[in-house]
Amino acid sequence: MTPFLIALQFLTTFPIQLKAMPSKQQNGQSLLFYPVVGLMIGLILCTVATLLQILPVVLLSSIILILWIWLTGGLHLDGLADTADAWVGGFGDKERTLTIMKDPACGPIGVLSLIILCLMKWSAIYVLLEKQLYAALLLFPVLGRLSPLFLFLTTPYIRGNGLGSSIAEFISKQWSIFILALCLIMTAYFSWVGILTALTFIMTLMYLRHKFIQRIGGITGDTIGASIEITEAVSLWSFVILSFYVVI
Image (cartoon, rainbow, N blue to C red):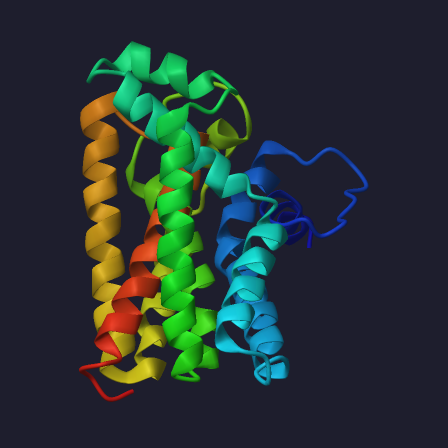
């Protein structure tokens, strides 16, 4: 269970204490449990939304967004802000982009990216709850956490140390492909809305991968965090928009 606990400790604010320092192999295996952690987050969001559905939708959507951020400790939002700052401030230069990405300070572009993304999520959550599609909250945290699985499987990790390097070295390709396929197939539970949302997710992820390789030659921890947040938001918007035109 150590790889699962590593994933849970890294991706959430749950009080997980490991008995020993994990090995590189266990860090690599932990990536396979990212979608499981995403499902746990989705279950909590879905349960809270269902239990508190008597509240005004505008208030409930704020509670769900705050809970979503709190459960992850804002980890991926930090990666998004760092990536946005680096992308704009890097002026297309790889080394300058990587240097800015290491800077812990958050610049105006990073702040703006956080505001835009949170606004996108909040408005989509509002519509989702208004249509009483509570079960759909299970989907987006899972899709978001498929992003690291796909990127580590297909894209070079360009920093030579840290957690990311051991994940990239010891990731199980066969199991990763199986989990990716299984999770994408399960989106069919939401009929054509789920299937088309999965296709939107795949296209978004492919585009992000292309831009990461084009600018810095691969991925870093910050770009992984950014990809989780972006694919979650795009999938959420896609699902909400499609729900107006396609029967679930």
